[in-house]
Image (cartoon, rainbow, N blue to C red; front, side, top):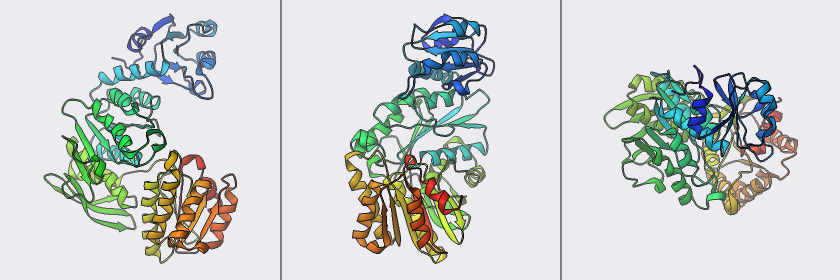
Length: 467
């Protein structure tokens, strides 16, 4: 078995990756790293060619940091430092592909119940919910952070050892074929698709193409595995053998009813194929998060988690990163949600902001930045956000970035009112929009701050919150 805890002999690692041993050192491999600055003693350092740098430049530094072995796709590298440090050198055709082969071999030798999650929106939140539910009764591993791509997923899988009874793996994508590659490594017992949105439409062209790319997750399902889909998404209907989770579709096998907003979060009843789980509480806001939680209910149900375990897990959910953090400051409620964004997730968050504002007798304030990777449909989709804000009854709309300004323009044209719409195209100046928001908000208001991650909306939030 490829056991990093006990140590993997370099010959076994080379065989698993289809590589050649250029130099054999004396140390077994006990970890994996792709960053020489974070390489620890015993690690296999994987030299990756990136857009801005080439990991092959740091092979010597990794050897000096105590790496047990380095993985290279260049036969002409200088072996002086690795040999001096007793660091093995493995040659492969492609280091990223070889890392994937190592992870796949490792995963094949383990017996953990595996759940893979993908989707345009909500996959990380869903992953967290599923992990919380399974962890209530089983030792469960999960993808950390955003380690969900061709590099991140193998690194996550290699941290999985025989002591875990289950794992929840997040699969990300930006183009066709990526999910197929990742699911072949993960080999899930259950595969979840949260939804089909417009994220990455720049690369895939249409929502139908995005759906087809997401459905690649089923290619890696183990025999008898379960495909769990969003029953409220028309593009996912009629998939043979699939199980459905929904809020609205009454024919779905798993549904939520009696959904209520409370001061502690959302409360609902989970309707399952042969039983009802009442009084489910999740410490999040918005009906879209109830749907995320229902995927966890379905996974817990099929994994044999008890009703009490499912309830306990849902209540123990913890958000990660910069997702939907609610802060009350000087009588104003702020929803800080700028890890990432899509038109669909902004609309869902605006609905949450509207409900919180109504509860506090205040106004709904949108502070929206650019949404990226929308390609030729960027103007159309940004305008759809502004139109939705007007239909919802948003009171103030602030736009940060040239694309977001299109949403603001549409919001003004659709009914928000020109004197309540403010556009700030220069994203290098967060102070200007922050000052404008601060001048106009008042106690009771709910302010949503959201955009794609690279816009760095935390700069706006930090000024407003006095950080």
